[in-house]
Image (cartoon, rainbow, N blue to C red):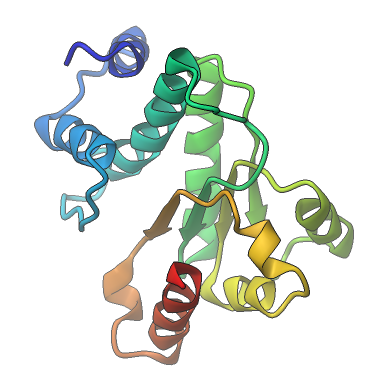
Length: 181
């Protein structure tokens, strides 16, 4: 990988005593090639960083190449059915943002989020928003939702196997379908 963004990600990994795994590097490359897919790896193997660093490094590349990158606006929506997992993903995203020296925000939006937090997120969206299927649907029902999602680059559905065949899974599928239009 010769890309400066990827080199920075690898350097950050190395500073933590980690080595990027092949599936992580493959995810980064696939993301840069505008591909989508499913990551199937054991718990604790680094799936979160495979996707998260794909978008973070892509943003660094855009900035370096002067492709009109702007750090403002929602770029990643991360949907998870488990609030405890949402908190873990949030902490991992904050660690990566800080480790890569980026000026990004990552926030949670669940049933536990205050009304004040939710209003502020609508007014000034973070670059990464970790949410639940139910909160995602509330966002889609909000006036001006198309502007809120206008800079969206990446949709992550975590723990998809927990959602398949359920009402919550249908909610996620409908949300993604609406966002794609």
